[in-house]
Image (cartoon, rainbow, N blue to C red):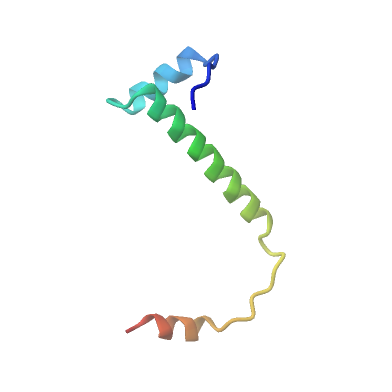
Length: 66
């Protein structure tokens, strides 16, 4: 999808230097994916300590060995 954006040139230049050989489009797409991933992780971290797990970790470990 094509979109016109007003992007911080300094931030884009820094990103281009950090990922040489990448296109602007690739860098922006990577940044969007990373942003979404971090937001999902934040939501998961918010659940820490709020749910009880009733499984048997030792049993799960035994099942994984084949």
